[in-house]
Amino acid sequence: MTEGNALPENAPPKSVPPRRPFLKFFNDLGPGLITGAADDDPSGISTYSVTGAAFGLSALWTAPFSFPLMAAVQLMCARLGLVSGRGLAANIRRRYPRWVMWSACGILLVANIFNIGADLAGMSDAMAMVTGINSLIWSPVFAVALVALVVFASYRLVARVFKWLTLVLFAYVITAFLVHPAWKPILLATLIPHIQWTKEYFSILVGIFGTTISPYLFFWQSAQEVEEERSHGRRTLASRKGATDMELSASRKDVLIGMFFSNLVMYFIILTTAATLHAHGMVDIQSAKQAAEALRPLAGNGAYLLFTLGIVGTGMLGIPVLAGSSAYAVAESSAWGGSLDAKLRVMPKFYGVLALAVIIGLSLDFAGFNSVRMLFLSAVLNGLLAPPLIVLVILLTNDGVVMGDRKNGLLLSTLGWICAGVMTLCGIGMFVS
Image 1: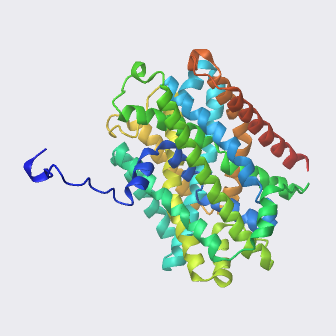
Image 2: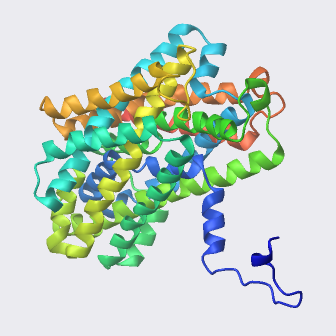
Image 3: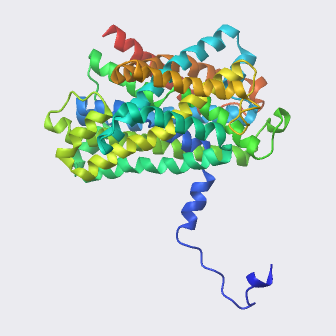
C-alpha cells in the first residue's frame, strides 16, 4: 500500500457504501439478465399490451405459468454453452444433419428480421410521440447507432451498456402502480388460469409464448456464455470445455434472476393495460404506441412518459440481441466463428450478417409494411419455431457426447418437454379453432 493510501493501525474499517451490495449483486449478473431483459423488446411490449387490453386481467396467469418453462429452456441453453464451449447452432451442426441446422437457422432469420422491423417501428413511433419528429427519421438513426455500437465497441463495453439498459424495464413496474389497480381481483386472476376457447385467445397465447420463449434467445444465451468464457481468457475450445459446480451455480442464479425479471415486467405490462384500457372498454389496441396514447388520459402524463420511453430503452437492448443472435446462428452454422469481441476486419462475415439483418428490418419499415402485421408474423413464427428447437436443446443437453457428466437433471428435462408440448398445443389450438 502506498503511503498516501495508508491507514493508521487503530483506524476503524471503512464502512461499505449503501449501494455497494446492490452494485456487486448487479455486476455478478451477466448473460441471463441481458437475455431476460431483451425478451421484453418493443414487440413483446406490444404483444403484452394487446393481451391486457383485449382480455383484461384474465391473461395475468400466463406470466407465472411461463416463468418456470422459460427459465428451464434458457438454463439448458446456458449450460450447453458453458459445458460444450460452443453455441447452440455449432452444436446442432456437429450432431444433426445439415437440413435440420439450416431449417432452424432460416426460420430464425425470417422471424428475427420481421421482429427487428417491428421493433424499429415501435421505437421510432415512440420517439415521434415525444418529440414530434417524423418516425421515418428516427428509424435509420436508431439502426445506424445500434449497429455502430455492436460493431465498433468491445464485448465488455457492449455487455455493460446492455446490462444498464435492463433497468429501463422498471418503468413498467412503476407505471402499474401509478394506475392504482384493485389488487384482490388481480391476485385471483394471477392464481386461477382462465382460458377462452376461441381463435383470438389461442392466437394471443401463441403470441405470448412466442414472444416470451423466443428462439433468438436460445441462440443468444448459449453464445453469450461462450463470449463470457472468451472474455476470461479461454480463447480455445479445449480451455472452454467443461464447467465447475461454481460456474454452473453462478449461471443458474443469473438465468433465474433474468427470467424472473423478464416475466415480472411482462406481468406488469398486462396488468397496466388491463386495469386501464380494458377496464374502460378500449379492447382493440393493436400496438404499444396505441397503448401509450390511450394511457395518457386514463393514467396521466407520468404513466404515459414511462411507458413510451420504456419502448425506446427496450428496443436499444432488443434489436442488437435479435441481430446478434442471427449473426451467431449463421456464423456457427457456416463454421466461420463469430464474436462480438472481435474486430470488424477479423470477422467481416459475422458483422456483415448482423448489419444486414438490421438493414433488411429497416427496409421493411420504409417499404410500408404494417408494423402490427410484422409483430404478428414474428410472434407466430417464433411460437411455431420454438417447440422443435426446444426439443433439439433438450436432446443436446442430454447428450453425453456434448455434455459429458453434466447432462440435465430430471426436473430440467421435464420442464423442457412440458414447454415444447404446451407451445405445440397452443399452435394447434390456434389453427383448429
